[in-house]
Image 1 (cartoon, rainbow, N blue to C red):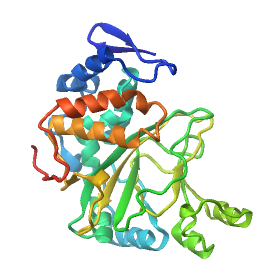
Image 2: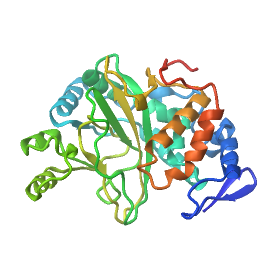
Image 3: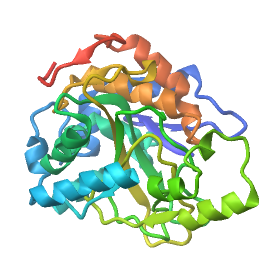
Length: 332
């Protein structure tokens, strides 16, 4: 795979037989990663310096109070919620398009979180109202996030069936930047009320299930196609997955963030916690992206190539984020 790691210097990524970046490649990537102008050149319509429009630039018509009540009720009874489009199409289009230049230069898609707009998405009013009602007014965002890119071809797919932390007072929110369809790997899940009726709420902790139980679980499964700019969220007991794609018309591009309830004790992998809206210094964003790559490398077959780069950047870029920090919303 050919990339450009310096302005005029082509570099080749490791082949499957060479599964790590060399020191020279790490240095080349790192020099670009720490240069804000590099990211501005890749996506000039997005911002990296905290001076974007904020969540107001992403919001379209906010959800009405009755719709928020309905979504929170669904979250409590079925373990998930799903809205219609609540983020503006022009903003979502810019966010979706921005992932392609990153991929062309062989950056993991999660480096899209260098841009303000990917943090601002967690603060749109429709989302904050749902999260506040479910987790309490003093909820915070944790440091687990990701940008997904599923190719529209047979054999590609999202992450396999799993639940998230399994902890109470948690919420994952998944935002499609492109239309998520049955053909390009939309989310599937097992609503908690259906699993409960089948007596299988604990099946994820089992080593095996009987054939009859498996049949009940498959019967309970729900596919959730979603328009770009909508919101989909679930608690951390819900079993969910990104389905396998077929020959779709376009890739499935999406992002996910997580929230921790007011008063809940954060796990070590969730730290640091953030007050919202999140606006961090450039170096803090790079550190958090590197943490995400190290946290989620087991889910993404290509991501382990970049672990050396992530470890290098975490150690060399500063000021470092301390594990027990709770980062405040102002630009730091």
